[in-house]
Image (cartoon, rainbow, N blue to C red; front, side):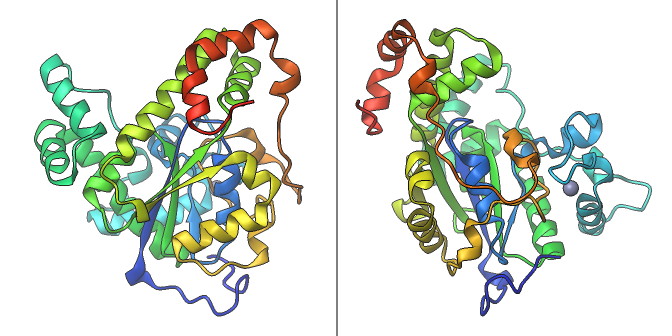
Length: 321
Ligand SMILES: [Zn+2]
């Protein structure tokens, strides 16, 4: 299903399968890196795939190809593969009838605290045990996700799945379930730019935008605890835009993928992502450009407000000026 001529000499090795999770806050370049990596013949990006079943049921958000998720030929072919894996007949519809999104924390507050601690910070054996014992619904959703990943790999003849769901609990639950396959790409962007984007999009006040950005940074940092350092990599959005070639060479090296210049092409062909930034719908080849509109758009008062709430976190990530 993918164009294997894009990078010559790159063989598909199903035995070397990987799940690459894109973590961090939204509007930090996750859709950009997801579309770029999808150019590689061994890679299939599926975007914010945790919403796959929701969108298939509601038809509320189309696939990147433009078709509703429930009738997209790409997803229908993968659904047919899933039917076989689940032993379901032709009258059943895995796209609509399975669930891979994590549900909110358990209702019992004490259990919820244990579950949260395990999901965020516990090392693998403890976290895995707590996840299985106290959050069986999470465990089922993650095991179902692994089945979907296998179906996607099989149909697309790829070995690397890019899941840019960003949900920090999903990040940790995937790692706990399949630690050897798991790789984390942590997308980082100046919190002022992310907050400005949230304000533009929703009109929310700076206090809330800054708080939400800071919280997502903290959650990603906490969930990364216990994941071996050679299985996670930080990618700064600004570096990716300023020097895409050098950055993507490093990312490919980290993921064990052969680099080819085709990776830098921005096009939507072959993309069947779920959810994400509206840039995924734009057609034709485009330049990778750094979006720093926040420098003109944020008032002095908003900048002060951001600094009061999230300045420390931003400086910790290297954004000082
Ligand atoms: Zn599609």
